[in-house]
Length: 265
Image (cartoon, rainbow, N blue to C red; front, side):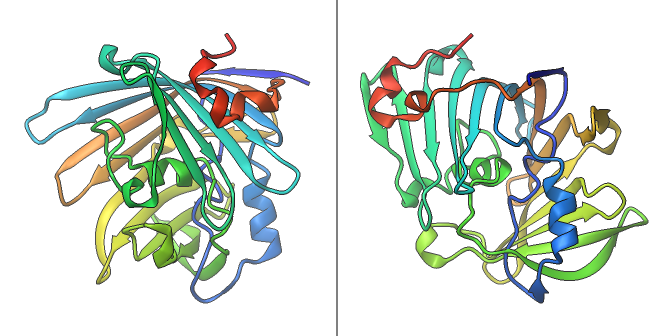
């Protein structure tokens, strides 16, 4: 069955992006509640990222995203960038492969496919406040991090489930801890805190609560804001269009064919 959702978000694709280490294993009922808002097989979406620097200058990044889930609980993602003009046609491929994902990029101006190493995953993606690692987390592509549940908390006066992650040093992550907060009523992600070494809060991803709308049997956020507290910058990520359960051939996620890929629309 095929569903088309316009001006909606990736549901809780962000959902399980941070499950991993602290007080106790995640309650199975909590995990099931979070997973019910995830795409089950595939998702095709159009995203827009608007980044604002300290002086108010705005930069726009737009891409088509293709995501496919596999029976072994891993995923593959390919992004085709449409804006700005200087990166038009650039492709980014992420292959989830625990313990370390593979990431490839093709830039038309260079005429070659290159692999992104773990040393670069913490760098900014085209001037936005999202690093390559942040994109992996946003699309739940870090299954090697094991989920652990911290004590419940409160956020904006509402009880939330708190899930923590501590990335392995070998991953190349610059985060010491990643803390995700889920509303206990609907299990929708509301905020993620990214801490650097020493417990210093570096970034914060906030879901626009007003953008959460019911779509079929799920609830879907439409807008996310990533703030870099050290740099004083922010990026608003908007999901403009989303299609679920779209047939996606495995061959489009082959890094050797990345140069040929031009989208499926």
